[in-house]
Image 1 (spheres, rainbow, N blue to C red):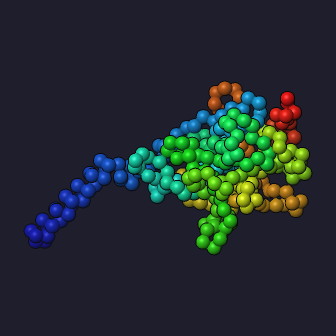
Image 2: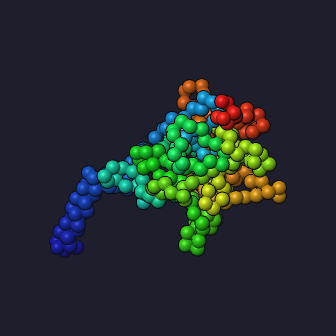
Image 3: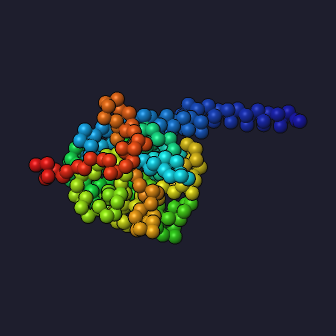
Length: 286
């Protein structure tokens, strides 16, 4: 090897080392970006506690699907990767951002959503069946993005299942309006307008398309956080025209014990809607 070639290699190595050190100083190395993302998005969050057994605007909840024989318990989560990460002017998530269902059911920035009003209802007021509302990620690193969906098309649909896509986007609009329906279709008419109980199986439907939020156990996504389920908007009906367990969700709050623990949604009382006390509307209480 000639001395010229050796000098060229030395210069190239020095340039590469200089570029590496500059990126490290700015926090732009891949490993640094991964650490920044996971440190922020997995930060623990305290869920709201329901003192009256119902859900209210402003509550911080998790959307939990208890699973089935071939699908584990999971919760809707922000599927942010390095392409979703922004560092300037402050660390956060870029919109739009995908969602998935993680089997790690722990309240953190990634899994916590805020029940938000779209009709002027103040924070603290009761969320009722069939009332329009939005689901928003926490502020700060999660950027307060809204769970959004729209009619599927050839260009815009789920990557795996090709069904109606669900993602997070900035700004509230008609595409981010949802409603809660009773899990039993035969009780929906009489429950309309009544308060939605916390920690009870319900169906969450997209207002514009009338498709129910669903988790797909047979469509696995490989994410930075492991293997997770695809979350889409699609109503799965059984032979009795009732939604299947893919569409059953628990808006999970903290345990009323006061320690901020997640409500024991796996207990029989949480899964059996017949064991839940009925909630009267505000007008009935007055």
